[in-house]
Length: 234
Image 1 (cartoon, rainbow, N blue to C red):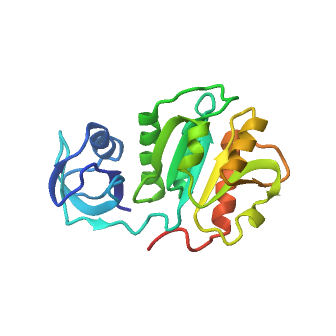
Image 2: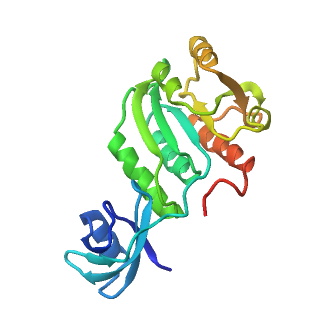
């Protein structure tokens, strides 16, 4: 199986790999001169095969890049309220693998964590794209106040709520979708009202209360189940 790695500024010709990618290619996977790898640029959604022509540092001669065929076809925005520990890392990773096109990290009234390392979250998204074969990464916005996050939505807005209507009903015939997931303590009444004023409706997945990081994956899984076979280009 061809080793696949992220390469910023991917173009035809010889390129020196970043130190992290160099280590991954030559030390972790022990690739050597003459081996073929596949590079992808998650920012431009380009990919190309290349031959490793040198090590220490690693240099690869890439063929002419092509537009990736492995990217989401339909727009899905995730508004994820900040959570403690590494929960946001898990959400970003899973959302990337589940085809989200935009992630908005927001601070709600009950958010325990008020900020985050957006650069680290981008690295998590790139690694998730590499692992799952995706050729791009979600647009990552944040960390913003929840009141500003509503304006970054697109299409049908759904606020995850255990008392809402079944997801299949609220997403019926909706292509572009924005899913909003609250913090550990949930949304306040004022935040529910603000979401409704912004056009969001309440939807639920299953009968049980979920952790914020579980809720994101469950809601996105339900979203793609309704669009099976049409979520990815190519």
